[in-house]
Image (tube, rainbow, N blue to C red; front, side):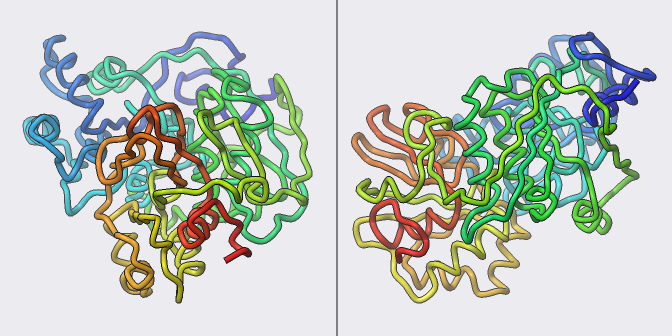
Length: 419
């Protein structure tokens, strides 16, 4: 029976020869993760169940990245719960402040999540790892507790939807624009509990950073997973990082899809999602009248080294508008260090931007960039819901690092060629 890449990975982990959409299965989990918001709930459920130990202390990661460095007493208590639990159960992959990063950039960087894996995380953007050719998805904290105990989880096999991107991208257009364009076309529930499979000549040419961005935001279309079949680009990324074996899967040519979208994106300009949904997508050229107060460049969506390089290219020799505060957040310590070596941090400081230690911070309205009533932000983050980054009377506009950097200079939403 022909199968998609998602079906093949799940079948292998359920010890099945074949699977069909909507079947209920129990699958082995290769890796599980939680953060300082979700893992404390999982730890409580783990203890209430009377569990004596975790299924594998090397296959679990605890990453305090949302409210860290701790912003208050409550967040300090949350982080301490993770620290104590990791010590109690010998969890190898506990990442303390100073050694950590935003989880969905950190774990691929560390070679902990790999092609062919089944990965679950108590965070909705766990789907990021689909860029490696893994079946990766977010779950609830009680599900994380069960996986920490057993190393297994149940799934309903999702139907797959194929997205084919053809043509040649224009300057400044990348993975963020492609995924925002996609969500704009199908809506925030257009792939609900589906496996979004990103393919085509445009995707083949994307670097890993852009692939991670696309898979990261699959959840914003309601998807269970956003997956890209691994290739030579994937191999180049994982071969020097992988801490264990991995396996490449491909969809069969005659695999069955619930739907297929085939788009020529040659004419796509940089796009922006306007409040208050990621599907409210407009071309950047339509939005130059929107003045802004803040720019955030970072997050699990666009805080990678390639993103910082793009932003620095635009900011170099220029200043952030006096009416704008610009916050740059490298996604991991390794990215921060390499940005230092390349002079990117100096570029940001010369432009009068603030540079933060790795943290999710402002993305979820946690800290490091909360918006006041009436303020507007352009952010390279993944959600722009009401009150997402602060006050319910504030607004968040989602963009690529290129548009964010240009907007920081202009003081309004701007095309990179306009500054």
